[in-house]
Amino acid sequence: MLSAMRGGMSLEFLRAANPRFAMVLGSGLGAIADALGIEAEVPYPQVPGLLASTVPGHAGRLVLVRPEGIPMLIAQGRSHLYEGLSAAQVTAQVRVLHDLGVRTLMLTNAAGAVNTCFGVGELMAISDHLNLTGTTPLLGGPHFKDMTEVYSKRWRAEMKLIATNAGFPLHEGVYAGLLGPQYETPAEVRMLRVLGADAVGMSTVLEAIQARALDMEVIGVSTLTNWAAGITQDALSHDEVMVAGRSVVGQMTALVRGIASRLAAGD
Ligand code: HPA
Image 1 (cartoon, helix red, strand yellow):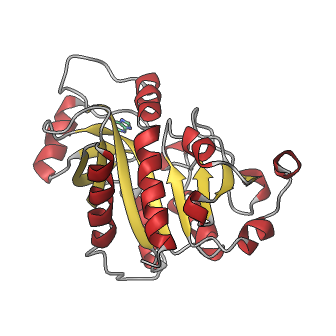
Image 2 (cartoon, protein in one colour; image 1 turned 60 degrees about the vertical axis):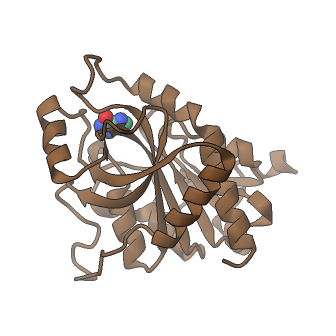
């Protein structure tokens, strides 16, 4: 049945599954979709408004899975501003997911660790963000949306319990979202620390803003794939980011299953 569905399903099939929960996968996390058991998939070029990704490690498809029996969509691949796209283009995915019925959105990413109390290869629940991209998907409206609690406090507490029960650390901190595509300089990382950042990356903030503007509940989780520039003597590489991303697939899958079981219980 699956082989017949692969590549051939329509968006309406995904809508009919009534997905209320979705996840956007960051670099190196593609295996989560496989770990949860892919039921159907729709490649991005078949979805109006979505673009095939140009970044290695981002597949470019919407996948239907059922952790704990809950219909859930996984957006495997995302667009980034640094690909030369607009804020509206990189957040089209969030609007598509909302249109399909999603109301709880988990955004994941690969990030450099700025806070030296954290560790590479560990996860950080995003408590808040610094949007340093210089743009927003809300240009032209809606205006003046409240951003006091972008990342759901309730789900942060639930994730902490899930991680503790499963026996892995889950940090909490502020994610700074930058334009990229180059990594930061050591001086920029020192600046980010002064500004209150615990981690730095090139995604997530615009999607989170768009999701909140649509009144979705947002959950953010960063994989700390490397020390931000200048913390060690090492140069940064995308390969290192991909390898570290893959190493936390088990932990990230445990978080998803935990969230799904709470959603199944009606939380
Ligand atoms: N900086 C910005 N983006 C990133 C990093 C980083 O160190 N690691 C993974 N994504």
